[in-house]
Amino acid sequence: MRVVYVLSFILSACSLLYELLIAQTLTMIAGNMVVWYSLTVGIFLAAMGVGVILHGSLGWSRNWGRLYMVEIMLSLIGASAVILLNSAHTLYLFQMTRSTGDMSIFIFFSLWFTITFLIGILTGMELPLLIDLGKAVAAGTDVTNRVLGWDYIGALAGGVIFPLFLVPFLYLHTIGFLIAGLNLLVAFYLLRCLLPRSPWASVKTVGCAVFGTILVVATMAQAEIDQYFLQRYYYYQEASESLGQLIRPMHDMPFVYRENSPYQKIDIVHDPGHYDNFMEAYSTKFIEKPYQPTNRYLFLNGDFQLASNYEELYHEWFTHIPIIVNGKVPERVLVLGGGDGIIHRELLKYRGVKSIDHVDIDHRLVALAKAHPILSTINEGSLHDSRVHISFGDAFQYARNYNGKKYDAIYMDFPNALDYNVSKLYSREFYHFVRRCLANDGFAVLDAPEIETIQELDARNKVGSRPGGSWAIHSNTMRLAGFKTVIPYYSLLENDNPNAYGGVGDSADALIVEEETQELGTDSGVNYELEQGFIMLRKDERRGPFEYMDFGIKLHVLNELRFGLAFPHFPENKGPVDLTKVNSILRPTLPEGGIWYIRSAW
Image 1: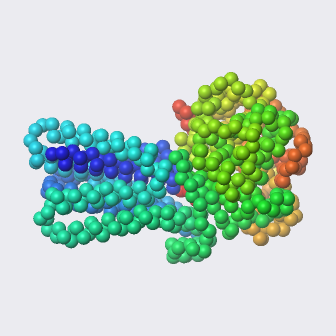
Image 2: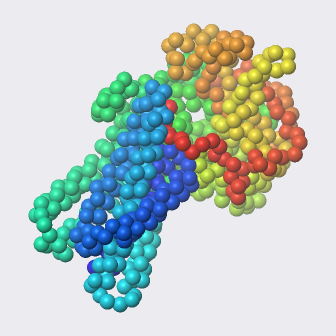
Image 3: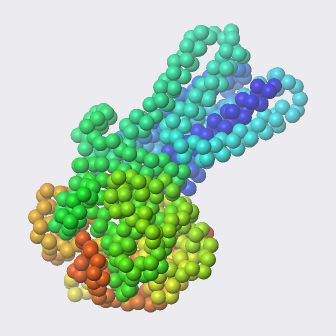
């Protein structure tokens, strides 16, 4: 009878681990953690119900042989689940280069549903089989209760092991191999100890041994398998001539450096195919600092964070424009997020900055920013400066646990709000805590890439711009949190630069000529895809236009002309707050858009 209880514990843990593994894989590929975890759990439980019904209605034999077959099928499907989903993701990236990604989206999510449903059905068959087998071994009414009890305890064990001991340290496909190996060991035990006389026992034993060997080899090659799919994710454009070319090993492409942390996957990519040489027409960085790395990119969980070729276009606008608008250098600065250390590099250019308190949740990212040759060169060793004081923790909790210290400037550099887990960092509650930490004459600033500019004709038939995208949600949320000044600004470059315009044909990925902008009357019709939105906050009320102020520090891109372009339109924050557009922890309105989203690197 103890065998039944032990098997109930082990198999329940394996089943929950499969469920969490599929949900986590889907989250890494498609974002929206809350949505996909919820749907995966729901589909899995429904499939378990189908499995229980099938077990009771089809009249299948209820013996150890039936359980053996269930475990073999579970190990086969479970071991291949992550590989299949990543392969479907590769297919989507290939089809996206041909503007035919809709069908591959359908294929991807259909595959996810099929895998989840099949594993759920097989899991649903396990428990009633174990109950029936337990009753056949020992009589008594408490057999069912004890099997159920050990099943629930096993589920708890799986729920604890997955986030604490598996995801932070292992590749997702490796976790699948290990769980499948556990199912295979159970099947092998059943075959050798409880089914010694079953038909084809020797053949089944050899089959288990072969499959076990495959799992061991695959586990030993886990890094190579991970690199295989990483290269397809980041270099799919370089191998998009045919699907066969994309599937073949990319030995000619650079190695993708990946660091696993308890919070995210950190990737440093060298992609010479994405060299954006048009920035040479605007930036002096590589002229004055030729040692700076080129063609290096930082990704977190597969989402783009920075490009070494033009990161100054982002960080100079982010860091310096609020200081210029404010009219003085902040002495006490708080940086929330920004683990790459590049904001610190820009802030440390001011002698007036006395201290920078840096709060980041991921110690691995900060360690890389300090020691990795690429990141430490880009940030110029800023995190080693004596004025920088680093602490690790959640930015939300740091701001919430206010200790009375007032900051002259607060910089918030967070990932995009692609799921509800990150959405709290853009919530009314969080901004309330930030406002409490801010000095009366200070400012807070964050990057908000969702507030792209919308070009339109005004009443005088001239081209004008206004904030679009998620601007209404950000604006109403910040106003409700108590900020009287909510100013959007953008990293815009002049579109009549003759050097840049002459290079359109050489760098079509970075500069594209759009007929729509020409119709609206722009000088050259050149649209820069590197436009980034930011929002500056103050407790008091400030109105533009703002004047450029030179603090005597070295900047590579930002100048008086481009400072003026940063404010294409200043919206009046008047009227009542629209509560339907407020992002709150209790009622999140971010992220916006549909759920049928699949990540791509570029």
